Length: 336
Figure 1 (cartoon, rainbow, N blue to C red):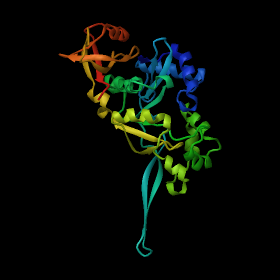
Figure 2 (cartoon, rainbow, N blue to C red):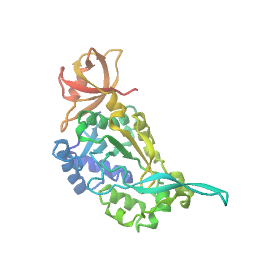
Figure 3 (tube, rainbow, N blue to C red):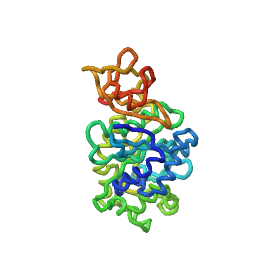
């Protein structure tokens, strides 16, 4: 399997991938026109022609038969062109000595605290490939790209995880909160924000703190949780050091994970090594390997062995990377 930079030629494959994702991939809508526009911006970003506030990077996973079976993206710096809203879970204390009352109320505060952070987005992998090293390859490939282009990304990296919803795409958090302020269902609101239409949030969302006790029990239970389909993805990100710090999605209450870029494991522990072509041997371990390119970036997972500043891989692996022996690559172990 190969992960590489998306390009306009991937339009048909990405439309098919987005259609198969249903409502779970709002930032990659199954619209040929919208995806074409986004791919043009993605090409400009990989070429280094976009400012960080506008930079949009998308990696795709390509199967041996050429099909696009997965995607994972990065926004250089979110919220610098229009506000990016989150809820922060805080605490409000009410106390009275005379009445002998002391109460702690978990409280939702509407904030723009994550403005300027690099945001991970558009992660989706076809169900038949959610096994082995494929999910880790697709998710962690983003960090390998960041490691080679740190100037293009912020120190803070965040990801809004998909929150709890049922088979009919009904969100208990939205039903208890958002629907009282927006005359639309959850799927419609989620779609509009996914395609970048966020102005209505500022106009309609209540600005005052909201006591969580006024929400339904199902809504309270959904705060900081993720959709069952996103649990595996959350575990991969937590392996990399990303953590929930009390920020949630304003629509479905899903957890926002975050980390300092330099503390993400694949960035911190990856090394640049000279590529050597040979026989990895019995000591080989699975590695995530990047050719360190931009428009032509290519990443694979393959058995490899580190020896005297070189990374020994089989000829087939070097061919998939389109590299010759003696080229510098970036590599990190997939096992720990």
